[in-house]
Figure (cartoon, protein in one colour):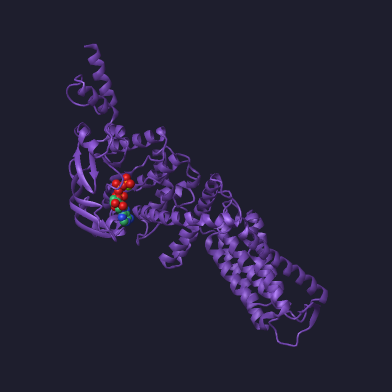
Length: 284
Length: 297
Ligand SMILES: Nc1ncnc2c1ncn2[C@@H]1O[C@H](COP(=O)(O)OP(=O)(O)OP(=O)(O)O)[C@@H](O)[C@H]1O
Ligand SMILES: [Mg+2]
Protein backbone atom coordinates (compact mmCIF):
# COMPACT_ATOMS: atom_id res chain seq x y z
CA UNK A 1 0.00 0.00 0.00
CA UNK A 2 2.91 2.38 0.18
CA UNK A 3 5.03 2.28 -2.97
CA UNK A 4 4.45 5.22 -5.28
CA UNK A 5 2.85 3.61 -8.33
CA UNK A 6 2.70 6.93 -10.16
CA UNK A 7 5.38 9.55 -9.98
CA UNK A 8 5.52 12.93 -11.74
CA UNK A 9 8.90 14.52 -11.51
CA UNK A 10 8.86 18.20 -12.50
CA UNK A 11 6.72 17.52 -15.56
CA UNK A 12 5.86 20.24 -18.05
CA UNK A 13 4.02 19.65 -21.28
CA UNK A 14 2.73 21.69 -24.20
CA UNK A 15 0.69 20.14 -27.02
CA UNK A 16 2.26 20.19 -30.48
CA UNK A 17 1.45 23.42 -32.26
CA UNK A 18 0.74 25.37 -29.08
CA UNK A 19 3.15 27.34 -26.96
CA UNK A 20 1.10 27.40 -23.79
CA UNK A 21 1.72 24.81 -21.12
CA UNK A 22 -1.01 22.26 -20.50
CA UNK A 23 1.08 21.04 -17.56
CA UNK A 24 3.63 23.14 -15.72
CA UNK A 25 6.26 21.82 -13.29
CA UNK A 26 4.01 19.11 -11.93
CA UNK A 27 5.55 16.97 -9.23
CA UNK A 28 3.46 14.44 -7.38
CA UNK A 29 3.37 10.89 -6.09
CA UNK A 30 0.42 8.57 -5.93
CA UNK A 31 0.70 5.43 -3.85
CA UNK A 32 -0.68 2.07 -4.82
CA UNK A 33 -4.20 1.68 -3.47
CA UNK A 34 -4.90 5.40 -3.10
CA UNK A 35 -8.15 7.00 -4.20
CA UNK A 36 -7.29 10.40 -5.61
CA UNK A 37 -9.64 13.11 -6.81
CA UNK A 38 -8.51 15.81 -9.20
CA UNK A 39 -10.32 19.13 -9.22
CA UNK A 40 -9.91 22.18 -11.40
CA UNK A 41 -11.63 24.49 -13.84
CA UNK A 42 -11.97 23.77 -17.56
CA UNK A 43 -8.57 23.84 -19.19
CA UNK A 44 -6.70 23.37 -15.92
CA UNK A 45 -4.85 20.36 -17.34
CA UNK A 46 -6.70 17.53 -15.59
CA UNK A 47 -7.27 15.42 -18.70
CA UNK A 48 -3.71 15.99 -19.85
CA UNK A 49 -2.44 14.81 -16.48
CA UNK A 50 -4.55 11.64 -16.78
CA UNK A 51 -3.36 10.98 -20.33
CA UNK A 52 0.26 11.20 -19.16
CA UNK A 53 -0.28 8.24 -16.88
CA UNK A 54 -0.99 5.80 -19.71
CA UNK A 55 1.40 7.43 -22.14
CA UNK A 56 -1.19 8.77 -24.62
CA UNK A 57 0.65 11.98 -23.81
CA UNK A 58 3.28 12.23 -25.22
CA UNK A 59 3.30 9.04 -27.34
CA UNK A 60 0.06 9.50 -29.23
CA UNK A 61 -0.85 13.13 -28.64
CA UNK A 62 2.51 14.62 -29.29
CA UNK A 63 4.10 17.71 -27.86
CA UNK A 64 6.97 18.84 -25.79
CA UNK A 65 7.35 16.97 -22.53
CA UNK A 66 10.05 17.71 -20.01
CA UNK A 67 10.55 16.01 -16.69
CA UNK A 68 9.68 12.38 -16.08
CA UNK A 69 6.51 10.38 -15.55
CA UNK A 70 7.03 6.95 -14.01
CA UNK A 71 4.18 4.46 -13.74
CA UNK A 72 4.74 1.12 -12.05
CA UNK A 73 8.46 1.74 -12.45
CA UNK A 74 8.21 2.38 -16.21
CA UNK A 75 9.11 5.68 -17.83
CA UNK A 76 5.96 6.35 -19.88
CA UNK A 77 7.75 8.05 -22.73
CA UNK A 78 9.79 4.90 -23.33
CA UNK A 79 6.93 2.40 -23.50
CA UNK A 80 4.17 2.07 -26.08
CA UNK A 81 0.66 2.83 -24.88
CA UNK A 82 -0.36 -0.79 -25.39
CA UNK A 83 2.21 -1.93 -22.81
CA UNK A 84 0.98 0.62 -20.30
CA UNK A 85 -2.60 -0.46 -21.08
CA UNK A 86 -1.98 -3.59 -19.01
CA UNK A 87 -1.30 -1.36 -16.03
CA UNK A 88 -3.59 1.63 -16.53
CA UNK A 89 -7.23 1.72 -17.57
CA UNK A 90 -8.81 5.01 -18.51
CA UNK A 91 -12.41 6.01 -19.23
CA UNK A 92 -13.63 9.32 -20.56
CA UNK A 93 -16.76 11.42 -20.22
CA UNK A 94 -18.32 10.58 -23.60
CA UNK A 95 -18.89 6.84 -23.48
CA UNK A 96 -20.61 6.73 -26.83
CA UNK A 97 -17.43 7.95 -28.52
CA UNK A 98 -15.52 5.06 -26.99
CA UNK A 99 -17.70 2.30 -28.41
CA UNK A 100 -16.81 0.60 -31.63
CA UNK A 101 -18.09 -2.96 -31.46
CA UNK A 102 -21.34 -4.61 -32.42
CA UNK A 103 -22.12 -6.11 -29.04
CA UNK A 104 -21.36 -5.29 -25.42
CA UNK A 105 -19.45 -8.54 -25.03
CA UNK A 106 -17.15 -7.76 -27.94
CA UNK A 107 -16.64 -4.24 -26.63
CA UNK A 108 -15.37 -5.71 -23.37
CA UNK A 109 -13.35 -8.39 -25.16
CA UNK A 110 -11.52 -5.95 -27.43
CA UNK A 111 -8.66 -5.26 -25.06
CA UNK A 112 -8.37 -8.95 -24.20
CA UNK A 113 -8.10 -9.90 -27.85
CA UNK A 114 -5.24 -7.52 -28.33
CA UNK A 115 -3.54 -8.72 -25.17
CA UNK A 116 -3.67 -12.25 -26.59
CA UNK A 117 -5.88 -13.69 -23.83
CA UNK A 118 -6.89 -17.21 -24.93
CA UNK A 119 -10.36 -17.55 -26.41
CA UNK A 120 -11.37 -20.10 -23.78
CA UNK A 121 -10.66 -17.71 -20.89
CA UNK A 122 -12.33 -14.72 -22.47
CA UNK A 123 -16.00 -15.55 -21.97
CA UNK A 124 -15.65 -15.76 -18.22
CA UNK A 125 -13.67 -12.52 -17.96
CA UNK A 126 -16.23 -10.76 -20.16
CA UNK A 127 -19.24 -11.88 -18.14
CA UNK A 128 -17.46 -11.15 -14.84
CA UNK A 129 -16.57 -7.65 -16.00
CA UNK A 130 -20.11 -6.97 -17.16
CA UNK A 131 -21.49 -8.29 -13.87
CA UNK A 132 -19.10 -6.04 -11.95
CA UNK A 133 -20.71 -2.95 -13.47
CA UNK A 134 -24.25 -4.29 -13.18
CA UNK A 135 -24.61 -5.23 -16.82
CA UNK A 136 -24.85 -9.00 -16.40
CA UNK A 137 -26.82 -10.49 -19.27
CA UNK A 138 -26.15 -7.55 -21.61
CA UNK A 139 -23.58 -9.51 -23.65
CA UNK A 140 -25.47 -9.49 -26.94
CA UNK A 141 -26.82 -5.93 -26.74
CA UNK A 142 -25.58 -3.32 -29.17
CA UNK A 143 -23.53 -0.66 -27.33
CA UNK A 144 -25.25 2.06 -29.33
CA UNK A 145 -28.63 0.91 -28.09
CA UNK A 146 -27.76 1.38 -24.40
CA UNK A 147 -28.60 4.38 -22.22
CA UNK A 148 -25.86 6.88 -21.41
CA UNK A 149 -25.37 5.42 -17.94
CA UNK A 150 -25.23 1.88 -19.26
CA UNK A 151 -22.75 2.94 -21.94
CA UNK A 152 -20.55 4.54 -19.32
CA UNK A 153 -20.61 1.40 -17.22
CA UNK A 154 -19.83 -0.64 -20.31
CA UNK A 155 -16.82 1.57 -21.01
CA UNK A 156 -15.69 0.93 -17.44
CA UNK A 157 -16.23 -2.83 -17.83
CA UNK A 158 -14.12 -2.78 -20.99
CA UNK A 159 -11.30 -1.28 -18.97
CA UNK A 160 -11.79 -3.52 -15.91
CA UNK A 161 -11.54 -6.64 -18.07
CA UNK A 162 -7.88 -5.79 -18.56
CA UNK A 163 -7.41 -5.98 -14.76
CA UNK A 164 -5.45 -2.74 -14.54
CA UNK A 165 -3.73 -1.72 -11.30
CA UNK A 166 -4.72 1.89 -11.91
CA UNK A 167 -8.17 3.10 -12.93
CA UNK A 168 -8.50 6.66 -14.21
CA UNK A 169 -11.95 8.12 -14.74
CA UNK A 170 -12.17 11.48 -16.49
CA UNK A 171 -15.49 13.09 -15.54
CA UNK A 172 -17.13 9.67 -15.72
CA UNK A 173 -20.53 10.83 -14.55
CA UNK A 174 -21.13 14.00 -16.51
CA UNK A 175 -23.79 12.28 -18.62
CA UNK A 176 -25.41 10.36 -15.80
CA UNK A 177 -28.43 10.95 -13.60
CA UNK A 178 -27.93 10.99 -9.80
CA UNK A 179 -28.53 7.25 -9.47
CA UNK A 180 -26.11 6.49 -12.31
CA UNK A 181 -23.48 8.71 -10.69
CA UNK A 182 -23.93 6.96 -7.37
CA UNK A 183 -23.49 3.55 -9.02
CA UNK A 184 -20.25 4.53 -10.69
CA UNK A 185 -18.75 5.96 -7.52
CA UNK A 186 -19.86 3.03 -5.39
CA UNK A 187 -18.26 0.69 -7.88
CA UNK A 188 -14.99 2.60 -7.88
CA UNK A 189 -14.98 2.66 -4.08
CA UNK A 190 -15.51 -1.09 -4.05
CA UNK A 191 -12.66 -1.76 -6.49
CA UNK A 192 -10.47 0.49 -4.43
CA UNK A 193 -11.47 -1.03 -1.09
CA UNK A 194 -11.68 -4.69 -1.99
CA UNK A 195 -9.03 -5.08 -4.67
CA UNK A 196 -6.72 -2.28 -3.68
CA UNK A 197 -7.00 -0.75 -7.13
CA UNK A 198 -5.50 2.71 -7.41
CA UNK A 199 -8.30 5.06 -8.47
CA UNK A 200 -7.92 8.54 -9.93
CA UNK A 201 -11.13 10.45 -10.55
CA UNK A 202 -11.37 13.77 -12.34
CA UNK A 203 -14.59 15.23 -11.06
CA UNK A 204 -16.47 18.45 -10.37
CA UNK A 205 -18.79 17.04 -7.71
CA UNK A 206 -17.04 18.04 -4.51
CA UNK A 207 -19.52 16.30 -2.19
CA UNK A 208 -18.76 12.98 -3.82
CA UNK A 209 -15.02 13.57 -3.70
CA UNK A 210 -15.14 14.57 -0.06
CA UNK A 211 -16.86 11.28 0.68
CA UNK A 212 -14.69 8.85 -1.26
CA UNK A 213 -11.24 10.28 -1.88
CA UNK A 214 -8.17 9.75 0.27
CA UNK A 215 -6.60 12.74 -1.36
CA UNK A 216 -7.63 15.77 -3.39
CA UNK A 217 -5.39 17.42 -5.95
CA UNK A 218 -6.38 20.86 -7.21
CA UNK A 219 -5.07 22.06 -10.55
CA UNK A 220 -5.03 25.50 -12.08
CA UNK A 221 -3.35 26.69 -15.26
CA UNK A 222 -1.45 23.42 -15.66
CA UNK A 223 -0.06 23.51 -12.13
CA UNK A 224 -0.86 21.46 -9.08
CA UNK A 225 -1.83 24.19 -6.65
CA UNK A 226 -3.15 22.11 -3.74
CA UNK A 227 -2.57 18.53 -2.72
CA UNK A 228 -3.86 17.03 0.51
CA UNK A 229 -6.63 15.15 2.28
CA UNK A 230 -10.21 16.27 1.59
CA UNK A 231 -10.28 17.68 5.12
CA UNK A 232 -7.21 19.83 4.51
CA UNK A 233 -8.17 20.96 1.02
CA UNK A 234 -11.82 21.76 1.58
CA UNK A 235 -11.01 23.73 4.71
CA UNK A 236 -9.12 26.23 2.56
CA UNK A 237 -12.40 27.83 1.54
CA UNK A 238 -11.02 31.24 0.57
CA UNK A 239 -8.25 29.82 -1.61
CA UNK A 240 -10.72 27.59 -3.41
CA UNK A 241 -13.10 30.49 -3.89
CA UNK A 242 -10.24 32.48 -5.42
CA UNK A 243 -9.83 29.62 -7.91
CA UNK A 244 -13.60 29.74 -8.57
CA UNK A 245 -14.05 26.25 -7.20
CA UNK A 246 -16.93 25.10 -5.03
CA UNK A 247 -16.59 23.56 -1.60
CA UNK A 248 -18.97 20.92 -0.19
CA UNK A 249 -22.23 22.38 1.14
CA UNK A 250 -21.34 21.24 4.64
CA UNK A 251 -18.16 23.32 4.56
CA UNK A 252 -19.98 26.33 3.14
CA UNK A 253 -22.50 26.08 5.98
CA UNK A 254 -19.82 25.82 8.65
CA UNK A 255 -17.99 28.76 7.11
CA UNK A 256 -21.10 30.92 7.36
CA UNK A 257 -21.70 29.81 10.93
CA UNK A 258 -18.08 30.58 11.79
CA UNK A 259 -18.47 34.10 10.43
CA UNK A 260 -21.33 34.54 12.89
CA UNK A 261 -19.22 33.17 15.69
CA UNK A 262 -21.31 30.01 16.07
CA UNK A 263 -18.95 27.45 14.57
CA UNK A 264 -15.67 26.50 16.21
CA UNK A 265 -13.00 24.10 15.10
CA UNK A 266 -12.55 22.00 11.95
CA UNK A 267 -14.84 22.32 9.00
CA UNK A 268 -16.89 19.21 8.26
CA UNK A 269 -16.37 17.95 4.70
CA UNK A 270 -19.14 15.39 4.91
CA UNK A 271 -22.78 16.27 5.36
CA UNK A 272 -23.25 13.71 8.16
CA UNK A 273 -20.42 15.21 10.19
CA UNK A 274 -22.01 18.63 9.83
CA UNK A 275 -25.39 17.27 10.89
CA UNK A 276 -23.89 15.61 13.98
CA UNK A 277 -22.03 18.74 14.98
CA UNK A 278 -25.04 21.01 14.50
CA UNK A 279 -27.16 18.54 16.40
CA UNK A 280 -24.71 18.55 19.28
CA UNK A 281 -24.61 22.37 19.23
CA UNK A 282 -28.37 22.56 19.40
CA UNK A 283 -28.50 20.19 22.35
CA UNK A 284 -25.75 22.00 24.24
CA UNK B 1 -32.54 5.00 -30.31
CA UNK B 2 -31.88 1.84 -32.19
CA UNK B 3 -30.20 1.39 -35.52
CA UNK B 4 -33.33 0.54 -37.41
CA UNK B 5 -32.11 1.41 -40.83
CA UNK B 6 -28.52 0.34 -41.36
CA UNK B 7 -26.84 1.46 -44.55
CA UNK B 8 -26.77 -1.42 -47.03
CA UNK B 9 -23.14 -2.19 -46.36
CA UNK B 10 -22.95 -3.33 -42.79
CA UNK B 11 -23.95 -6.58 -41.20
CA UNK B 12 -27.66 -7.34 -40.95
CA UNK B 13 -27.63 -9.49 -37.84
CA UNK B 14 -29.14 -12.91 -38.19
CA UNK B 15 -28.55 -16.55 -37.59
CA UNK B 16 -29.23 -18.11 -40.97
CA UNK B 17 -27.14 -20.77 -42.65
CA UNK B 18 -25.59 -18.08 -44.83
CA UNK B 19 -24.71 -15.99 -41.78
CA UNK B 20 -22.99 -18.99 -40.26
CA UNK B 21 -20.76 -19.77 -43.22
CA UNK B 22 -17.23 -18.69 -42.34
CA UNK B 23 -15.80 -15.58 -44.01
CA UNK B 24 -13.22 -17.71 -45.84
CA UNK B 25 -15.59 -19.56 -48.21
CA UNK B 26 -17.59 -16.36 -48.68
CA UNK B 27 -14.51 -14.51 -49.79
CA UNK B 28 -13.63 -17.33 -52.16
CA UNK B 29 -17.13 -17.05 -53.57
CA UNK B 30 -16.85 -13.30 -54.07
CA UNK B 31 -13.43 -13.51 -55.70
CA UNK B 32 -14.62 -16.43 -57.85
CA UNK B 33 -17.69 -14.49 -58.91
CA UNK B 34 -15.62 -11.53 -60.03
CA UNK B 35 -13.13 -13.70 -61.95
CA UNK B 36 -15.86 -15.73 -63.64
CA UNK B 37 -17.99 -12.66 -64.38
CA UNK B 38 -15.12 -11.00 -66.18
CA UNK B 39 -13.98 -14.08 -68.07
CA UNK B 40 -17.33 -14.96 -69.60
CA UNK B 41 -19.67 -13.19 -71.96
CA UNK B 42 -22.35 -15.81 -71.56
CA UNK B 43 -25.38 -13.96 -70.25
CA UNK B 44 -27.04 -17.14 -69.07
CA UNK B 45 -24.11 -17.74 -66.73
CA UNK B 46 -23.98 -14.10 -65.65
CA UNK B 47 -27.65 -13.76 -64.78
CA UNK B 48 -27.73 -17.20 -63.14
CA UNK B 49 -24.94 -15.99 -60.90
CA UNK B 50 -26.98 -12.94 -59.97
CA UNK B 51 -30.03 -15.14 -59.39
CA UNK B 52 -28.02 -17.38 -57.05
CA UNK B 53 -26.92 -14.33 -55.08
CA UNK B 54 -30.61 -13.37 -54.82
CA UNK B 55 -31.43 -16.82 -53.48
CA UNK B 56 -28.70 -16.43 -50.87
CA UNK B 57 -30.13 -13.04 -49.88
CA UNK B 58 -33.62 -14.48 -49.46
CA UNK B 59 -32.24 -17.47 -47.58
CA UNK B 60 -30.37 -15.17 -45.21
CA UNK B 61 -33.48 -13.04 -44.67
CA UNK B 62 -31.73 -9.85 -45.76
CA UNK B 63 -33.73 -9.22 -48.93
CA UNK B 64 -34.95 -5.72 -48.02
CA UNK B 65 -31.54 -4.28 -47.17
CA UNK B 66 -30.04 -6.20 -50.08
CA UNK B 67 -32.46 -4.61 -52.55
CA UNK B 68 -31.65 -1.18 -51.12
CA UNK B 69 -27.99 -1.84 -51.84
CA UNK B 70 -28.83 -2.92 -55.37
CA UNK B 71 -30.67 0.36 -56.06
CA UNK B 72 -27.33 1.78 -57.17
CA UNK B 73 -27.70 -0.45 -60.24
CA UNK B 74 -30.67 1.58 -61.48
CA UNK B 75 -28.76 4.63 -62.72
CA UNK B 76 -25.73 2.57 -63.74
CA UNK B 77 -27.74 -0.08 -65.56
CA UNK B 78 -30.16 2.24 -67.30
CA UNK B 79 -27.46 4.54 -68.61
CA UNK B 80 -25.34 1.58 -69.68
CA UNK B 81 -28.10 -0.06 -71.71
CA UNK B 82 -29.28 3.23 -73.23
CA UNK B 83 -25.74 3.97 -74.32
CA UNK B 84 -25.29 0.56 -75.94
CA UNK B 85 -28.52 1.03 -77.88
CA UNK B 86 -27.50 4.49 -79.07
CA UNK B 87 -23.84 3.80 -79.74
CA UNK B 88 -22.99 0.08 -79.75
CA UNK B 89 -19.50 -0.90 -78.64
CA UNK B 90 -19.24 -3.42 -81.52
CA UNK B 91 -17.89 -3.10 -85.02
CA UNK B 92 -20.02 -1.60 -87.72
CA UNK B 93 -22.19 -2.23 -89.67
CA UNK B 94 -24.98 -1.81 -87.15
CA UNK B 95 -28.57 -2.95 -87.58
CA UNK B 96 -31.06 -0.16 -86.93
CA UNK B 97 -34.07 -1.09 -84.84
CA UNK B 98 -35.99 2.14 -84.95
CA UNK B 99 -35.73 5.85 -85.62
CA UNK B 100 -36.73 8.01 -82.70
CA UNK B 101 -36.72 11.58 -84.00
CA UNK B 102 -33.08 12.50 -84.58
CA UNK B 103 -31.65 9.36 -82.90
CA UNK B 104 -31.29 5.87 -84.29
CA UNK B 105 -31.56 2.84 -82.02
CA UNK B 106 -29.36 -0.15 -82.82
CA UNK B 107 -29.74 -3.80 -81.95
CA UNK B 108 -26.13 -4.90 -82.13
CA UNK B 109 -24.77 -3.45 -78.89
CA UNK B 110 -27.57 -4.67 -76.67
CA UNK B 111 -26.08 -8.10 -76.03
CA UNK B 112 -22.84 -6.52 -74.91
CA UNK B 113 -24.78 -4.08 -72.74
CA UNK B 114 -26.43 -7.00 -70.98
CA UNK B 115 -23.02 -8.61 -70.49
CA UNK B 116 -21.59 -5.49 -68.84
CA UNK B 117 -24.64 -5.07 -66.66
CA UNK B 118 -24.62 -8.77 -65.74
CA UNK B 119 -21.00 -8.56 -64.64
CA UNK B 120 -21.63 -5.59 -62.37
CA UNK B 121 -24.93 -7.04 -61.16
CA UNK B 122 -23.52 -10.45 -60.23
CA UNK B 123 -20.39 -9.09 -58.54
CA UNK B 124 -22.28 -6.44 -56.59
CA UNK B 125 -25.00 -8.86 -55.51
CA UNK B 126 -22.59 -11.43 -54.11
CA UNK B 127 -20.46 -8.75 -52.43
CA UNK B 128 -23.56 -7.37 -50.71
CA UNK B 129 -24.56 -10.83 -49.53
CA UNK B 130 -21.13 -11.28 -48.03
CA UNK B 131 -21.00 -7.84 -46.34
CA UNK B 132 -24.50 -8.18 -44.94
CA UNK B 133 -24.06 -11.65 -43.51
CA UNK B 134 -20.51 -11.50 -42.19
CA UNK B 135 -19.57 -10.07 -38.85
CA UNK B 136 -16.89 -7.38 -39.32
CA UNK B 137 -14.63 -8.83 -36.66
CA UNK B 138 -14.83 -12.28 -38.26
CA UNK B 139 -13.80 -10.71 -41.51
CA UNK B 140 -11.03 -8.93 -39.63
CA UNK B 141 -9.80 -12.20 -38.18
CA UNK B 142 -9.84 -13.90 -41.55
CA UNK B 143 -8.03 -11.05 -43.28
CA UNK B 144 -5.39 -11.17 -40.56
CA UNK B 145 -4.96 -14.89 -41.20
CA UNK B 146 -4.53 -14.12 -44.88
CA UNK B 147 -1.79 -11.66 -43.90
CA UNK B 148 -3.56 -8.62 -45.26
CA UNK B 149 -1.44 -5.70 -44.00
CA UNK B 150 -2.64 -4.75 -40.56
CA UNK B 151 -3.31 -1.07 -41.24
CA UNK B 152 -5.38 -1.81 -44.32
CA UNK B 153 -7.39 -4.39 -42.47
CA UNK B 154 -7.84 -2.05 -39.52
CA UNK B 155 -9.04 0.74 -41.78
CA UNK B 156 -11.70 -1.36 -43.41
CA UNK B 157 -12.85 -2.75 -40.06
CA UNK B 158 -13.11 0.74 -38.61
CA UNK B 159 -14.99 2.03 -41.61
CA UNK B 160 -17.56 -0.71 -41.35
CA UNK B 161 -17.95 -0.08 -37.65
CA UNK B 162 -18.37 3.65 -38.04
CA UNK B 163 -21.15 3.40 -40.62
CA UNK B 164 -24.00 2.80 -38.16
CA UNK B 165 -22.53 5.43 -35.87
CA UNK B 166 -22.54 8.05 -38.60
CA UNK B 167 -25.98 7.06 -39.71
CA UNK B 168 -27.27 7.60 -36.23
CA UNK B 169 -25.48 10.92 -35.95
CA UNK B 170 -27.09 12.19 -39.14
CA UNK B 171 -30.45 11.18 -37.68
CA UNK B 172 -29.80 13.05 -34.43
CA UNK B 173 -28.64 16.18 -36.21
CA UNK B 174 -31.58 16.09 -38.61
CA UNK B 175 -34.05 15.92 -35.76
CA UNK B 176 -32.17 18.68 -33.94
CA UNK B 177 -32.42 20.86 -37.03
CA UNK B 178 -36.08 19.99 -37.38
CA UNK B 179 -36.77 21.06 -33.83
CA UNK B 180 -35.14 24.37 -34.60
CA UNK B 181 -37.58 24.83 -37.45
CA UNK B 182 -35.29 23.73 -40.25
CA UNK B 183 -36.39 21.26 -42.81
CA UNK B 184 -35.76 17.74 -41.66
CA UNK B 185 -35.95 15.73 -44.85
CA UNK B 186 -34.78 15.76 -48.41
CA UNK B 187 -31.45 16.44 -49.91
CA UNK B 188 -31.31 20.12 -48.93
CA UNK B 189 -31.67 19.13 -45.28
CA UNK B 190 -29.13 16.34 -45.39
CA UNK B 191 -26.50 18.54 -46.98
CA UNK B 192 -25.98 21.08 -44.14
CA UNK B 193 -26.18 18.28 -41.60
CA UNK B 194 -23.03 16.78 -43.04
CA UNK B 195 -20.98 19.68 -41.75
CA UNK B 196 -21.67 19.02 -38.05
CA UNK B 197 -21.44 15.31 -38.72
CA UNK B 198 -17.97 15.64 -40.13
CA UNK B 199 -16.82 18.05 -37.47
CA UNK B 200 -18.17 15.62 -34.91
CA UNK B 201 -16.59 12.77 -36.78
CA UNK B 202 -13.09 14.15 -36.39
CA UNK B 203 -13.56 14.52 -32.67
CA UNK B 204 -15.16 11.09 -32.48
CA UNK B 205 -12.41 9.39 -34.40
CA UNK B 206 -9.77 10.98 -32.21
CA UNK B 207 -11.59 10.02 -29.02
CA UNK B 208 -12.19 6.51 -30.30
CA UNK B 209 -8.57 6.01 -31.26
CA UNK B 210 -7.44 7.25 -27.85
CA UNK B 211 -9.86 4.84 -26.23
CA UNK B 212 -8.81 1.92 -28.44
CA UNK B 213 -5.13 2.64 -27.94
CA UNK B 214 -5.68 2.78 -24.17
CA UNK B 215 -7.08 -0.72 -24.34
CA UNK B 216 -4.01 -2.08 -26.07
CA UNK B 217 -5.27 -1.84 -29.63
CA UNK B 218 -2.61 -2.01 -32.27
CA UNK B 219 -0.36 -4.39 -30.43
CA UNK B 220 1.73 -6.34 -32.87
CA UNK B 221 1.80 -9.47 -30.78
CA UNK B 222 -0.38 -12.53 -31.10
CA UNK B 223 -4.07 -11.58 -31.15
CA UNK B 224 -6.87 -13.84 -30.04
CA UNK B 225 -10.53 -13.64 -30.90
CA UNK B 226 -13.62 -13.52 -28.72
CA UNK B 227 -15.72 -14.78 -31.56
CA UNK B 228 -14.58 -18.16 -32.70
CA UNK B 229 -14.38 -18.56 -36.43
CA UNK B 230 -15.17 -22.26 -36.50
CA UNK B 231 -13.94 -24.32 -39.40
CA UNK B 232 -16.90 -26.54 -40.32
CA UNK B 233 -17.04 -29.34 -42.88
CA UNK B 234 -19.78 -27.39 -44.66
CA UNK B 235 -17.35 -24.50 -45.13
CA UNK B 236 -14.86 -26.75 -46.84
CA UNK B 237 -17.62 -28.26 -48.96
CA UNK B 238 -18.87 -24.83 -50.02
CA UNK B 239 -15.37 -23.63 -50.80
CA UNK B 240 -14.51 -26.74 -52.85
CA UNK B 241 -17.83 -26.75 -54.76
CA UNK B 242 -17.62 -23.05 -55.60
CA UNK B 243 -14.05 -23.37 -56.78
CA UNK B 244 -14.79 -26.43 -58.95
CA UNK B 245 -17.98 -25.05 -60.53
CA UNK B 246 -16.66 -21.58 -61.15
CA UNK B 247 -13.27 -22.74 -62.39
CA UNK B 248 -14.96 -25.13 -64.84
CA UNK B 249 -17.24 -22.41 -66.17
CA UNK B 250 -14.39 -19.94 -66.43
CA UNK B 251 -12.20 -22.41 -68.34
CA UNK B 252 -15.07 -23.35 -70.66
CA UNK B 253 -15.74 -19.66 -71.31
CA UNK B 254 -12.14 -18.90 -72.11
CA UNK B 255 -11.86 -21.93 -74.41
CA UNK B 256 -14.94 -20.82 -76.31
CA UNK B 257 -13.61 -17.31 -76.81
CA UNK B 258 -15.49 -15.99 -73.77
CA UNK B 259 -18.64 -17.88 -74.78
CA UNK B 260 -20.40 -15.01 -76.43
CA UNK B 261 -23.97 -16.03 -77.30
CA UNK B 262 -24.83 -12.96 -79.35
CA UNK B 263 -25.27 -15.16 -82.45
CA UNK B 264 -27.86 -17.36 -80.76
CA UNK B 265 -29.62 -14.67 -78.79
CA UNK B 266 -31.12 -11.95 -80.94
CA UNK B 267 -33.41 -9.15 -79.99
CA UNK B 268 -36.37 -7.93 -81.99
CA UNK B 269 -36.63 -4.32 -83.06
CA UNK B 270 -39.70 -3.84 -80.89
CA UNK B 271 -37.91 -5.23 -77.83
CA UNK B 272 -35.06 -2.76 -78.36
CA UNK B 273 -37.45 0.14 -78.74
CA UNK B 274 -39.44 -0.83 -75.65
CA UNK B 275 -36.32 -1.38 -73.56
CA UNK B 276 -34.85 1.92 -74.67
CA UNK B 277 -37.97 3.82 -73.65
CA UNK B 278 -37.91 2.06 -70.30
CA UNK B 279 -34.24 2.65 -69.47
CA UNK B 280 -34.13 6.18 -70.83
CA UNK B 281 -37.27 6.96 -68.86
CA UNK B 282 -35.78 5.46 -65.69
CA UNK B 283 -32.55 7.35 -66.11
CA UNK B 284 -34.23 10.69 -66.76
CA UNK B 285 -36.56 10.16 -63.80
CA UNK B 286 -33.61 9.51 -61.49
CA UNK B 287 -31.81 12.60 -62.74
CA UNK B 288 -34.94 14.74 -62.40
CA UNK B 289 -35.66 13.52 -58.89
CA UNK B 290 -32.07 14.14 -57.81
CA UNK B 291 -32.06 17.67 -59.19
CA UNK B 292 -35.48 18.40 -57.73
CA UNK B 293 -34.30 17.27 -54.30
CA UNK B 294 -31.18 19.39 -54.50
CA UNK B 295 -33.08 22.55 -55.31
CA UNK B 296 -36.09 22.00 -53.11
CA UNK B 297 -36.65 25.05 -50.95
N1 LIG C 1 -5.26 17.73 -28.23
C1 LIG C 1 -4.92 18.97 -27.83
N2 LIG C 1 -4.21 19.78 -28.65
C2 LIG C 1 -3.85 21.01 -28.27
N3 LIG C 1 -4.18 21.56 -27.08
C3 LIG C 1 -4.89 20.83 -26.21
C4 LIG C 1 -5.31 19.50 -26.54
N4 LIG C 1 -6.00 19.01 -25.50
C5 LIG C 1 -6.02 19.98 -24.55
N5 LIG C 1 -5.35 21.08 -24.96
C6 LIG C 1 -5.13 22.31 -24.19
O1 LIG C 1 -4.41 21.99 -23.02
C7 LIG C 1 -4.92 22.69 -21.90
C8 LIG C 1 -5.33 21.70 -20.82
O2 LIG C 1 -6.42 20.93 -21.32
P1 LIG C 1 -7.06 19.72 -20.54
O3 LIG C 1 -7.99 19.06 -21.49
O4 LIG C 1 -6.00 18.89 -19.95
O5 LIG C 1 -7.88 20.45 -19.40
P2 LIG C 1 -8.99 19.88 -18.41
O6 LIG C 1 -8.60 20.33 -17.06
O7 LIG C 1 -9.17 18.44 -18.63
O8 LIG C 1 -10.28 20.67 -18.88
P3 LIG C 1 -11.81 20.21 -18.89
O9 LIG C 1 -12.35 20.41 -17.52
O10 LIG C 1 -12.43 21.14 -19.87
O11 LIG C 1 -11.85 18.79 -19.35
C9 LIG C 1 -6.06 23.55 -22.41
O12 LIG C 1 -5.58 24.84 -22.59
C10 LIG C 1 -6.43 22.92 -23.73
O13 LIG C 1 -6.90 23.88 -24.62
MG1 LIG D 1 -10.81 17.26 -19.36
